Image (cartoon, rainbow, N blue to C red; front, side, top):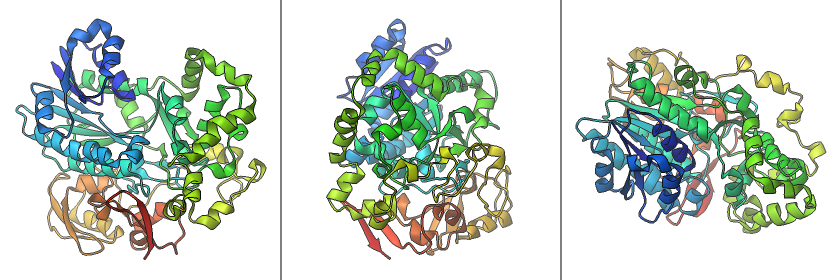
Length: 512
């Protein structure tokens, strides 16, 4: 049996390749590697005993020729290729090429490959957009409110929609949560991206190792069991488990504990964004775990292992904290991805997207003693809150869709009721299956075709962002009752902004 894999040189891909090579039924793993990517040498060294079972296909995922070579004779195709932040922010055209166009090309090749391989597509938690203490728990089917100026998320949104609407007989979409990997600290200390992490953002982590185990376990189980009714043609969240549900502050704090400090030692409250991030705790995160039993590592396990493998972290304990703050953290203020950079260069569009305006930024408390943290039992407004109770998913406040979205099938009346919550209309008058192609109309009178599964079960409601780099949720949420439930957790009802990139990917904001 042959398995094809894109993104093998990435953090999740590397672990997945290792796990796949442990499956005896797999004779060969074909991996797609860019012409100028030298990391395949590391892969071959990492899998020295099994390198004869690895076939390297040189090329770009947006190349039809490369994808044809990759998919030929494959029983499974696993797509992990992605241009992720901060590279997607720096090279937006590459993000579009890989995350959107590349997926379209790969899907087309799979559709026309005979016999068709089964397709596992890795998506992202970034599709859900910003969450805070008002709705920290989410599930597949929740509205996909990708954050303004996040070119990674919006291209992944389009790629996922393409898979859902494809003619592939057996596909699955796995939305990866935040992932812990060995290069994590190095990657985050080289860019201002870490300042996008809201201190009170709910984050659920999974390790790259566990994610790789999941993919291998899916294939192993599919080889011996019919998963057609429970797994294929569906969307799932890759979760890490309740033990890995933390906040943005927790994550930064755990990282700094490796060098004997804390987040409060190296950060100040106004360093980081207060909204426009992405992350949540998965209410339905148990589904994949119950099917494939892959969760084995906690965030505590990860940080302890990272500390064990990197002896030089101990040196941080003897360096004065003020010097680390100055030369490690503050030096990133000059980076284009840092809020301090936006302030210096009058990037009002981003300041408004990430803080709600300059006044909100200036009003952030200067002292940690006055700044509200969920882990210290205070919500974003300073009100008392029981953090442990918030983390108990039995107390989760879920989205009201007007219908029960957990059902397997819906009547035409239920679909119409759901669509009306979005402010739209269902034009089609009959439905036989969740995978029928139906005609819908959005709140602006634009018609589009999609499957009920795509719209209801996967949370996709077509809007301008599916074709242009725009974020129009201030306007949409005023009519869309589903969007409004999440959007107004971190936005005011009188906000009226339209965010967009121009042709050169310069950020803009206009008043509606």
